[in-house]
Length: 402
Ligand code: FAD
Image (tube, rainbow, N blue to C red; front, side, top):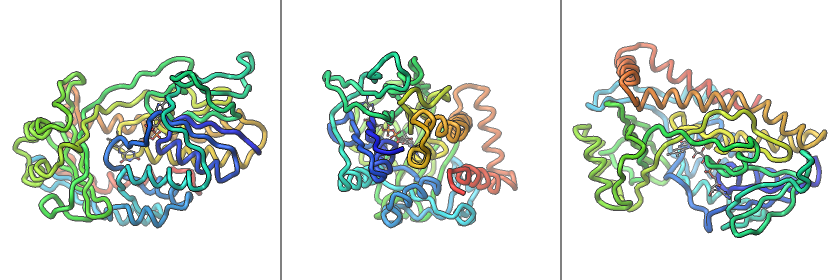
């Protein structure tokens, strides 16, 4: 397809990576972002090998190595500190042809934005999309535009990309109904300075027990990304943001857990501690309608337990731009190909992550039984390490590459 005007709603990982690909193919692209400045949600993100491959394709190979943690091993320990499974990630990387790089999220997003803008990409901040429309409402194939909360409108476009995250407005247009996020558990995350008391610089350590998890993962420049989770009720009262009460809450939830977890809680800068409800959205019946198409969390919002939400967003960007630039029957034909290529993959990720979330963070007595059984498997099954690594390898290998 040639000479397309493209509007992207949302300047997160999905929107910026899609915009960068499409700008490079010579399309006239404008990204409209709600926030007055780009602010990442969460401290870091593990970009698994499938996401790293897209970043490499975008020309960020060296930057990913510089920003990323050297994650060589993945280790499960119990909430009592007992070692359960210790796995070498080397064979996974060898099998799929690339490493995983956990990176600070702000730096990843800044890098995408800087490159897009430096290459002449247009980005309009502070525009919150409230609806999208066809120029000719009677024609499904009509050009489109978005309307913002200040009453202004976007450029009229041939392609409107919805990259506006879990509460997507574009998704409501595509599906002709709203989809509500489903709550699963509460997550705390942030960055701390690397310290031997917390873990080794090349190890991803997860403590699991009592239906909760506390974890550190290395990122670049001598930092650990930490994330902790517990299946609190959705309406549990939250301590004041940035207050010492946030630390007290973690001390209470992880009382009696090993010294490394206590050191971690002590080391947290509570003024930068994120405490967020983790939700996902049921798999969508479709990913496009007319000339509007969904990428990233607007298309497949998943819990972070597989570390694949952002990676799938990057895969979407690559696949969508690849069909747009290599086929020439029409925009709707491109979107149908994109959906056919992506739908099963992203639905599988959402459902697998949901299953895994229920195993880690049980919500009822039945769930607790399954979680206890999983702890037992981690403790005693001889095959558990190879099963876990096999599962990760399978997820990474099914990306859009030969
Ligand atoms: P978002 O990052 O949500 O970006 C959407 C953008 O659109 C935002 O900038 C928003 O301001 C803007 N926007 C929203 N509404 C509007 C509107 N109406 N108008 C204009 N702009 C709008 N993924 C991984 O791959 N690996 C991980 O390790 C990982 N860890 C995670 C940990 C946590 C705690 C969480 C919450 C998620 C994690 N994820 C991970 C998932 C990953 O963060 C998301 O899948 C990814 O950020 C999705 O990118 P996106 O651009 O689609 O959406």
